[in-house]
Length: 345
Image (cartoon, rainbow, N blue to C red; front, side, top):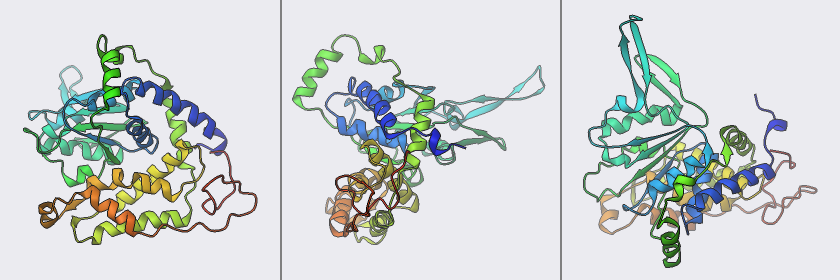
């Protein structure tokens, strides 16, 4: 078991994350907030869904993140004829051994890139459910553990595009966050022409962090402190989605857990040992919106899930910070949220 002395300090975390961030931003120009969210999901032990129109760099972002870490990477191109066994693996009869031999599928990697995940049938998409939640695969009654760290980075086109299937609610709920890359600014697009006009920077991209470093950082994020008022604030935000009149499906308890884990990772990336309500607010749309289903009337009124989450953020009272305890040294904005003495993560 990892002890606090074995965990990485915030200084170590910042140094490693800055290397990975710089590596990814060298490929994805002008999208620092997208890169930060990707790193937040990685350190929070979640999975990332990248949704946007074709050609804005969804797959390139996933590849850049995967190649920046020295770990096993597998890419799955989702197509209508893809079978579940292509993802999980299959048992094949070995004539010489006279026994079944398991052939692992593409899911057996530390970073799995699912390209255009919503072009496969729902049957194939459901093959990812067990692996994303339990980090294991069960084939023919036998369970196989997946490597650690394990992260699925999936890209998808909007459901309005031809040849796409909507992701099942159960699968969307397993993605910690959804991010949209968006079109670059004119300056970033001009820089992209200079950088990508000849050779793709992905070809020269080298790992800047090892898998064991990421595991230490994940353990460090687990030690980030979340005060009771911040936890209650996260619960109130999620609970409000379940009673909102414009939603026919609210966020699940898993969403609350994902929101809390992402807030802890965001706090660590900011160099803090404690989470603030600001961390929860900044991640609420990315973590909650893709899990929500608007009512038919809300859709007719062009009300999106993102708008509903923003409305809930405005209506839900932010917890007031209590008086700072002597000697805590929490720094600016941290009064009352660090209910334990600072320690190494």
